[in-house]
Structures are given as structure tokens and as C-alpha cells.
Amino acid sequence: AQTDVFQVRRIVNPKGVYRDYNNSASFHVRMMQLEKEGATSFDAVMSQGPWRAYVVAGDNNFVKLDGKDEVEGSTRTPIDFNIDFTGTIPESQKDTKARFAVVRVEYHNYSCVHLIFVRQGHAPVRLYPGSPAWHTFNMRTKTSEVSQAVDEGSLFRFGVWDNPLDASGTNYTHKEYWVNVKPEDFANKYQRSSFKMADRMNQDPISWNSIGSKAQTDSFPDVTHDGRKFRVADIEDFVALRDATEQGYGILYGNDATDVQTDLNRAYGYQRDESGNADGTYGMRGCFAYIGEEGNPLRGYHLFFPVGASGYGHRKHAGKHGVGTETFNGVLRYACGRVEQNTTASMPLFYDLYMRPGAVYWARKREVKMVYDKEKLSWVDKGTLIALDINYFTFDFNSLPATNIFIGDNSDACFVRCVDR
Image 1 (cartoon, rainbow, N blue to C red):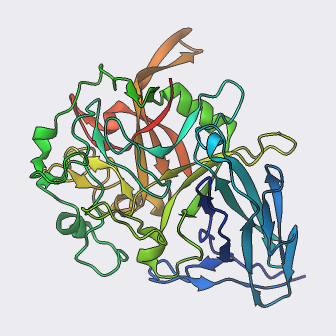
Image 2: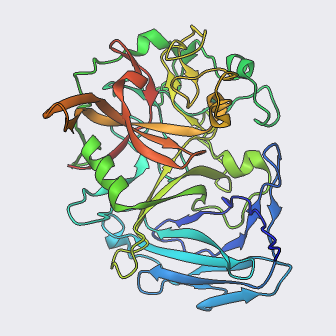
């Protein structure tokens, strides 16, 4: 007997919807897909067979779909409905409370599943027993975070709070759309000799070498702001988060967004300009780490880690990490090692690794990874871990060795996420 198998494209738009504590504006869901890798706009998903959407996890039923618990549609129709927020969080609880929900969409005759993560309120959250209180936002300066989860924040060289590389301008491009990327595009688009600092935008930019870097053996100092004490997340925090959660990848829409974006630059490109203004209707790519265990009272609780408006949340100290001939400093690129096409690899995955999206997040300090060797009957040093690696293309969410993001004691620049002290 013959069986027809249909390959379904990865759905990332939308993947998450966030609201401030006092905002209950509805969001119009239209499930979208890119018809091909080089496409510059998203198209509506037409369900081949009936579809339905319903809330599978949530705090106190604060989310409805078109005012109901479940919506549905027939075959060959777009997946189209509204996420409605019922009520808001009292202002007195805005710093301590956040509400979470997950919308499950079943389409193509209910055979395919897409999850949409919903959040109202931005208070720090403990995701699992023993979890630190994870902050919702990336750091922008030594004493401040960004104000929206769709904002990538600043890039920091290791241990250096005083020179935060501002995100504005990092998505500058000589190409109308960042598709069909070639190795030489990076030198034109992402090579910069000087950088604006997020806490002194009215001053002249400074050079990469002037930013400085602490040694691998050092650490990020703790932070005190408005009476609150917090620290950069440790490797142990990242590993525990990885082991306690599942991960989903896609586009988040923030407080001002009420509909999906179809243009590629708008769907991916939330970014402040040098005056601090941003179009809040734009989306941001990233990774959702969520509690997925059925029956868990915290099911659906999650964190979002942006990969940046460019898709590359990482600036390399120099091109000489691994393979490649680049020598300039500060290039914006996710890939730590491979910086050009790999024409000798037997696995196609590595041919264009240099252009793939992702982000790197610093840990507070390095940790030595020890593995017990049963043959040698001893513990073996397997490297020094110092960051979280998020590969948006291969769905990887893991720790990263220091050798990938240091040359001697000169570090790359990466994002920072904090937890309560």
C-alpha cells in the first residue's frame, strides 16, 4: 500500500505573546510560515484538515480564545483567532506576580502541534523547586535592564559592566533583507571599529580594545539597584534550567503588538534606535524555556531568551577562533568557530554554519566540567564552561566552553541575564 507523507515546515510566527501587568489588549493570532528559506515575508498556514486551539495551562483562566475556551476551523482554512486577556495584575503586585498560559494549536487534521506561550507581568519567576528567581529582561547597563522582553539588551565583554555595547545599530545592513548570506557579507555588515555605550549614548563611540575584558578566572560582580540585589546567572543555573524545562523556538511579540508581522524585518527586528525609541509592534526571535510536564502546577511557566534583532547575539573578539582567516575584532556573528563555508565537510549541516542564528549568554564565572573516566578510574577535566549557548537553527540549549569565546584572556561580547541574589 502507498502512503503519502507531507513534510511540514517549521512554524515560528507567532510563538509568544507578552503583556505588561496593566495591559489586557487582545492579540490577533494568524499562524504563519516561510514558504522557503530565502523568503522575505511570511504566508498564512492553511490547515489541510480541521484545526483547533485551546488553553492547556494557565493561571486562573486569565486567557480566552475569541472569548471562549476553545476555537476551531475546517479544512483548507487559515488558523486565525484572538488571544484575549481577562483582567490585569494589581499595581501593588507588579514586582512580585506574573501570570502564564500556553495555547495549544492542533492543525492539519489535528496531527501537528504548535504551542504559543503567553505571559502577563514581568516579575522575576521561580520555575522549579530550588530555582532562583529568574529575571525577565536582559541587562542594558550595569544597573539597569531593558523594559521589554523583546529587547535584546546590550552585549558585554566578560566581567566588564562599565562598557555595555548598545544594541542600536547592530542590525544595520547594506542588504534589504538578510537572506542568501555569503561569508563576505559579514565584513560589510557587521564589522565595526567603534561602539556606542548604552549608558552614554551622547558620547563618542569607543574602540573594541578600549572596552576591555576580564580574565577567564575572574567574574561578573553582583549588582545592587533600587535596593534590589541580583547576580548574573551561574552555569549551574543554566544547566538546571536546561534539565528542568523543554525548549521552544520562535517569535515573541511584546506589549504594544496586537497582530503578527509578515515582513521578515518586522517579524525579527525589534530594536531601539540611538534615541531609545522602538516600534513596539515588531517581533523578536528567541528561545522559550518552559515547564512542560503535564500535571505540574507550574506547567507553562517559562522564560524567553532573545537572540537579537540581527539573529546574532554575540560579537567575536577576533576571527581566529577555529577555522577562518578573519582578523578583525568585534564582528557580530553567532558562530564562534566556523566563519566561512565548509566545503570539505561530509555533513551538510556544517556547510553554512557561519551564517546560522543564535546567541550566547555569559555565566557569572567559569566552572570546570569534570567527568569520571571509568577506564582511568579518575575524574577528567573536560573543559571550562562559562556561558549559555542558544542555537536557534539546531534547537540547541547548552553550556559553552571558555575556549569558544576567549582568546587567552580576551573575551567576546555576549548577552547577560540575571537572577535575584
